[in-house]
Length: 416
Length: 163
Image 1 (spheres, chains in turn yellow, blue):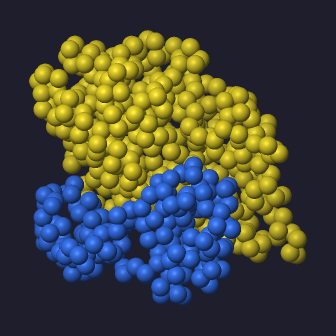
Image 2: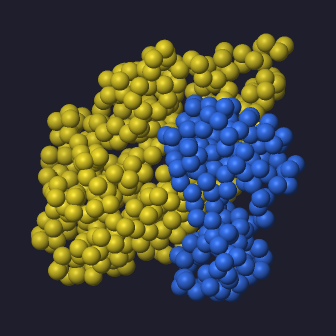
Image 3: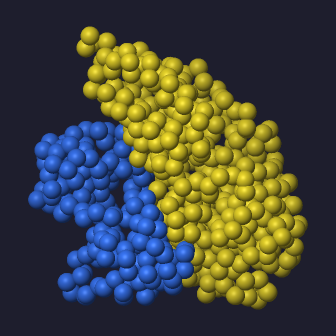
């Protein structure tokens, strides 16, 4: 089933602000099915069978995460839908909310009921003002129709959904930092273990799932996990929203099955390179992603732990030769310098020094001392940081230095 | 190409007096309401001064340091008085690809400032990572008004509205 569309099927065909439109195309049937069956265990089994992996970047199996919370001793549990995407180049969750907010709400309702949570939060990026309004409106409509609130669809289920708008911090997309942020603290990541599935929000078991993951759940409940696992059964099954940007013809969000190659994504689904542009490299997974050059075009995009090029959030930025690599280096470095939370020294200082060097690179004032320091900084960032942010800061830089050192030091050589 | 503007509560202040107490009473004094409350106060007053922070702290039964600790962390909450004109430009990878560096240079030349410095007390130019309209870059936000697909040649026309 290579052309199955799960999330984007009704995009543009229904009015996102009208719940009737969504119901007319079969919306909320999965919730009805689940409430009629009242079997959370069977639903959980379906999700486990589907092999659905977290779509936020890490690719943790969703079934096992939900299972951990559902099996927790504490009866007070929380469910959080993570819509705090601020990775540069990633806007799939925004498009989900923009085009079909009820799909997301249905997923949230089902998932919360499966794990037995009475309260669910939607953690929204603080800059998504328009999306906040859409969600508020959608929540209101869904409550009227009894899809959440007290006595869902005349059953005994209860669920309260609240929108929590963030305040603009990239690190709050990390689940433990997100929890701190809801608790009114600094959005700094927590030490793990204990994992959020044991001690999460306010010390209670909490499941944090990405919006795209949640949006897949109604389909799985309705069609069964078996069918879902057949969409590209090789490694990680299912479809994925890829976000194409840069020098390709069709930029934007594209839904395709996992397991396609980078070449297929760019040259078939993306319509090829934009006119007059020549492929140089592609960055896979936002600012923290690795760089794939021409020889890597046949890599398979999937949530495989052993994959050489992690898919991350699914953002693919295609870069052509007209782009100044120094600008990109500065962009990566300044992004991580700004977003480093300051909790651990290697990340706070390392990202700052990296930014300083990137600034000098742009001005063409790079010295031999900087070149030596670079290796040191990148090693430290890669190996000693508290959370993955520091590690991510080094990824793209390292790849760029390895593959394009000639272009990077071009200005410096001219100056000497 | 203005697409969306964030409601500016500061301008409404003259017509409709906003007091810190009024804002605080909208929220229950629970931990998960602290961040939304701080955001609202910062939006209404432009920034959170010690006076407001103290009142927030006593309302939420926290210490002043705890309130400042949270407030100082987030981009959308200011703890210092903001200049009359605050310009934010996205410098994420996609915006960089679309040419945000040229836009930044144009703005720097227009006001004779540098990104991040305080030489002009009335204007501040900052680069940010996510301004919420990714994929429509380069993005410029001036005093809460969001401009998408800004070109280097179009910068002057936008800035003229603010001087």
